[in-house]
Amino acid sequence: MEKRTTCNRDCPDSCGIVVTVEHGKAVRHVGDPAHGVTRGFLCSQGRDYLQRQYHPERVLYPQRRTQTGWERLSWDEALELAADKLRKCKAEAGPLSVLAVTYSGFQGHVQKTLAKLFWAHFGGATSTAGGLSVEPIHAAQHRDFGKACTHAPEDLVHSRAFVVWGKNLAVTRQHWIPFMDQARKNGARTLVIDPIPSATARRAERHFAIRPGSDRMLAIGIARLLLERDAIDAGFVSQHTQGFDTWRAIVMAHTLDQVSTATDLPLSAIEEIAEVYATAKPVSTLIGLGTCYWTHGGETVRFIDALAAVTGNLGVPGGGVSTDISSGLSGEVNVPASLKRTVRMPVLGSDILATRDPALAMGWVAGANPVAAAPDSHRVREGLKSLEFLVVVDQFMTATAEQASLFLPCTTYLEADDVVTSYGHHWVGLTRKVVEPWGEAKSDAEIYQGLANRLGFGDALDGSAESWTRKLLGTQVAYGALLRGSVRLPGAQDVPFADFRFGTPSGKFEFVGACTSVEQVDGLHLVATKSRRMINSQALPEDLPEEPEARVHPSVLAACGMVDGQRAMVVSPVGKVQALLRADDTLRGDVVVMNPARWKGDLIGVNQLREAKVTDLGCGAAMHETRVQLKRIERVQESL
Ligand code: SF4
Image 1 (cartoon, rainbow, N blue to C red):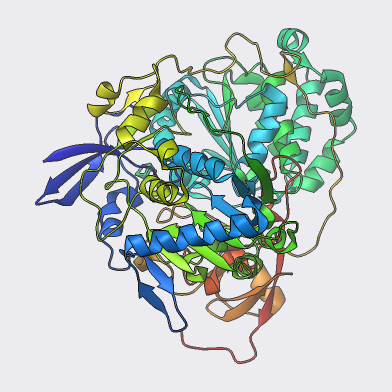
Image 2 (cartoon, rainbow, N blue to C red):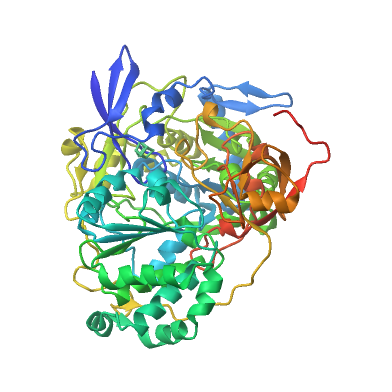
């Protein structure tokens, strides 16, 4: 029997999926050809999802940590234990002594809504502020535009040129590629700005291997050329922008020689990019985490946004500065007021340890794996270990779950009903319980409901996933229509700001008005690229590399007196990781490229090396600020 569902993993594509079920087991899992963005195609992790669904390492029962290992509990025992700890914390130090960490591990609105309701009815909790992803981009674009300026993927076909800036679309946004390819068939050019020759850079017609962290200076250099050549859309600037003169003064205070030195790009390369902005109307600028993972990341994004504004590439089909779409559901759920306090996600470990009045006594982590995914893993682990009791809700024994006092197994998107919108397109779909939960897994929603019943506010969370979905959909989309497959949200706009009315206080595009100086730090830039076989830290165990690799330009090896295939210690200010060195002459000489973070047994994860630093806007993680050194291992293991 064929059933439809929607991928709810932390991915902008939120694919529609058709599952074949035989004898109660999912046996085939393919892209839904009727979904307007999925178009029958899944990424490689999606294609292999049934391996994850039925993986032997999946944890299927509630478990409590004991002196000697893990002890299986019934759900009654597990929920009673968790409820007891919550009652005790609240009675002794108030609800803020509980830390609730939820991040982007699942995209279901019902699960997210019931989490919010649960903590509100509990009386509050200490939650997290900021994040590990696009938060600085959102904050920057909120200042410039009033909200995100991401065009629908369907609109990309209208672009005459793509400037892909710090984004590896071929890995992280695969369902945008067919729309871009359609534009390319019509003559659109693709320029990629990225220190690394990513998969996207390799398929582009031009790649500019910029010095890491110098994107803001490049945007300033491009702007200077546009100003000097009078390639400015004067009508748009005068009618629809604010702060042009201040921005112009900042730009003109930088010489092109300074820009060329800072970016490590010849003037001809900067001119080539400026020429595209000046002549190829409309230009679509697609920005990624590479632009914002810096302490000055928010400001960088604002200077890039300005290029689209001065060239009249806002509010027009095929233009925009795109990253994530913010599409939600219109139905309203009343969340009562409660006590609130936050710790910052990018510096989670330190903030947990520093929190007082009340200190944090208990933690609840769901839809997140901060030990693997947040910078300075050791500190995060230390912070979580300092809690008296930690509950982790997950499908696998992740690096964070390894620190838990109580593990609660949760369902996959094949085992529970929910509703999912996307941050990469405007389609909405249901996740459906197409098979019974494996083992004793429960959805996060059911877990919150079970706990709420024990804590005396069960009525507030009561109801089936379908009834919550209907409530969240409001009048926007009929539930019955979604039962037949995903639908595009009615009224969703392909082109933001088509009326040139922005959501800023002035109603206009607002230019960045400062360029904060940045301290130059010596050393090799640590770059951890995303992988086609991983979604952030999620991967199948068999896809994890046996040991970390560190790829560097041969000149780096020569300068250190090391050779390809040798093992060395990669050392940062906060950690060290032993890695196999690989020479790669396609890389710049100032980077070390390593595998992404691992989700479990995180003894070799790259986030052990990353320093926990906060971005200028959005409380994001300045993941790329860390510099490393390569050091010899005294006793080299010559096993190759
Ligand atoms: S991970 Fe992303 S691209 Fe892959 S199947 Fe899920 S939504 Fe689609």
